Amino acid sequence: MGVHNGAENWRNKSLPHYDDLCIIFGKDRAQGNRAEDCEDMSHNENVEEELLQMENDFNEQSEETSSASTMKRKRKFDPFIEGISKATALLGKDLREALTTMSQSLNVEVELQKKTSMVTSEILKIPSMDQRDKLKASRKIMCEPEEVLTFWNFEGEERETFVKLMLE
Image 1 (cartoon, one colour):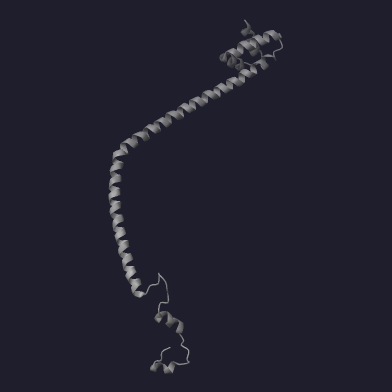
Image 2: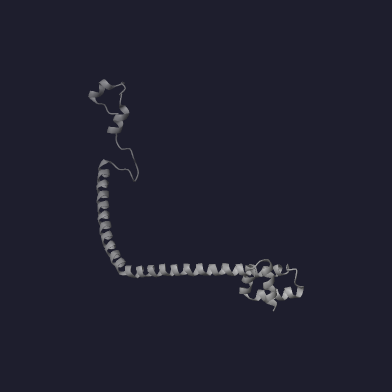
């Protein structure tokens, strides 16, 4: 350590804020490629600010040109897209209606099939007819969907009369 004439009074005495003073007045001890002193840091900050400013200016210009070109494109294709959108909505509506109708038709068909399959077992319960007449009537009724529905509309003696009428 070098000797300073005015520092003799401070020899062998502790300094109360020595660590803080070292931070403030000490040298930058960093080494290697990335070590910077105060001058380098201020110079690099100025360069970085200039680069950021140039980059921001470039981005603003490119946003202006790109937004202008996209607006032109949107205007060109808006009627076309709107037409497709309307056509799709109409097609969807028609498709929903068709599916609803088809679903109802299938439900009716399933119900008729269930009723048709139960006709024979109901006719076989009629006591006043012989076996052969029951089977003939069953086959005749099951061939026609209207006859099946009519059969199920009757009950008891009316149903029995309807079955006998089908044999004539």
